[in-house]
Image (tube, rainbow, N blue to C red):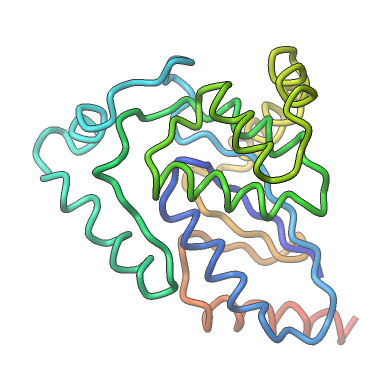
Length: 210
């Protein structure tokens, strides 16, 4: 079974959706290949990022209190052991560099890298659009800091992340997390683990029939 997941590294619901998927797969009896792909919630953010709170207020049309944005992911995250310290975040980042870092990470380390990026941003308020921060995160995950710095300073991984984001747009994907199971079943949002499991079971049943 293959599961393709489109996500953005500055998306709290993507972090929760990833955790829900892992819970749904916790005792899955067969091998599953999970591939994570780039989606940009806002690729118009400049490389240096923008101030987080004014940006979030603007997203709400200056009508929705910020805590209303934050309460739901805080609560849903806490249910699966995830911490969201939105008060620590100073910048809304351009996430291109972080997606390139994921693309450059060896396959067996990608899941850990994604988790590390989510934790860095949502728990510790680190700027995941900043080169130095990303090199530090990569080194903590066991990658060679000098190599990653050189790759991120060049265009390594850029074509891949742009192609993935363009494919998502072409398919009409407008929000994340977005999951595609065996190229046939698709659903969006941080669905509860039991609902994800139901989709996986249906996909597995279809494979058995074929």
